[in-house]
Amino acid sequence: MRIDIITAVPALLSGPFDASIVRRARDKGLVEIFVHDLHDYGKGKYKQIDDYPYGGGAGMVLMPEPLAACLDRLLAERTYDEVIFLTPDGMVLDQKTVNALSLRQNLILIAGHYKGIDERIRSLYVTREISIGDYVLSGGELPAAILTDAIVRLLPGAIGDETSALTDSFQDGLLSAPLYTRPEEFRGMKVPDVLLSGHHRKIREWRTEQALIRTRQRRPDLLDERD
Image (cartoon, rainbow, N blue to C red):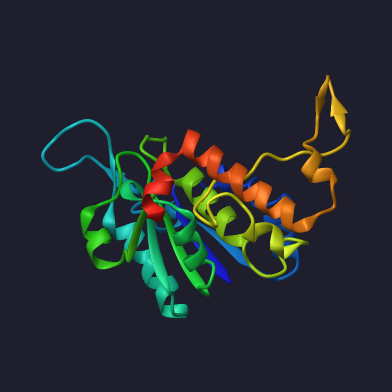
């Protein structure tokens, strides 16, 4: 898989991809991640990439020309499955979307900044718009990093035990059951007996029951979506 990220602030992405699962996936050749500095395509002596919005108002908007120049170069080199714009008014990211994107080969992520990007770029290039939640950040760099991490960890070979990703929260529409590890007793609290029983069917039943209880208590909306 190849992921290209277009950003006005590449320094914000200098750390997340150099550690943990994403780093191991890159080292194994499972994913290539390229960060493109939008200023390299800026206009004039000062590499301008933003300007005031037509109609007035506070803030700045990323200009269409630098974005188009970067996108045109990438799209001329290979076919991309999606051009994704990270924006607060996109569809909220969920595990189903991440699962689908993990099956793609080439993705472009546009990290918005300032007030956003010129609407014409959205109309001409963007195939999918994604939000990571109903709140606003300083830019789309952190959402791009989050989306990349969520996708990469699903690639075959990225995680040592590939079944682990399949039992994460949301994969079956439920939150995960409570987790325990050693010691068997901690500050007077013991691990549930069923988890020590070695009876795999009963353990699966217990985990399913606990997942349903936890989801009903904390995220009943997820159960509504299953109906």
